[in-house]
Image (cartoon, rainbow, N blue to C red; front, side, top):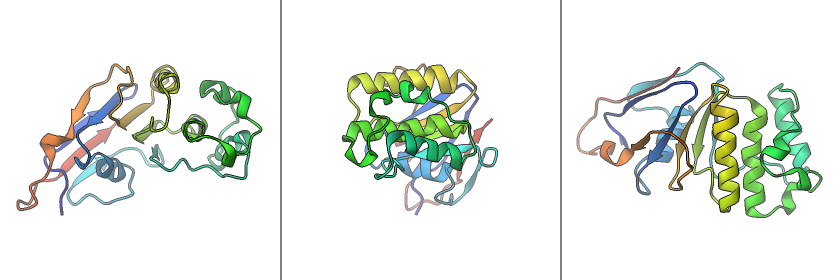
Length: 192
């Protein structure tokens, strides 16, 4: 059954697009389709292969590894050089030797987001990235996104209910909810 219909957008390097809409509007579904985790019923998604990273509520961390070991694991997995500065970017330096399984929910979320800083994917597809973060951590994440990721030519599509302070267009998916009784024309999304 279609969730969204008639949706079309393009996101250029250096830009972010913020997805808005009430719970159930299709934000997560759209991100999963963009990430290739769910097939579109119609339409197409265009982006270079192996260019996107999807981050949702699961942080992708290993509980028995330390914070630093987790980040090194992801850097090695993606054949990326280790960048010690990511610990500072996400306020994790004082936690670097702690096992990830002992972190608070907010600290775990920061570690999960820091993973994005080491894997080097230019396209970030983020589903509620600031869940469990306090105001200072939300601001730190938004600063990293703006000053590191977008400024270096990356792009992001972000589903969030929290203002991030980004100079980014907001796309309300409510108006694209599919009528389950009508077959739609599909959707197109492009990432350049």
